[in-house]
Length: 71
Image (cartoon, rainbow, N blue to C red; front, side):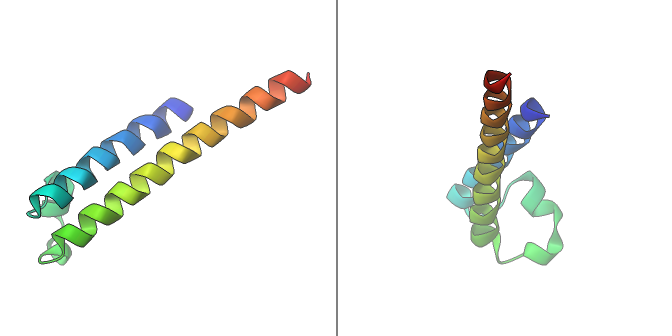
């Protein structure tokens, strides 16, 4: 599960940063017509959510290590 979260998080960060830099949206952002005109904000939001996902994966990893140390 940790690896899956890391991969999804990194892909989201790449997608979000790319969309924020180009300001025209990338793959996911262009597929959602509701985001037309809001590509920059959507890119930033996707990058932030990707970062949070990566942090959640790291947190899950550290909890597993702590559980093993207690045993």
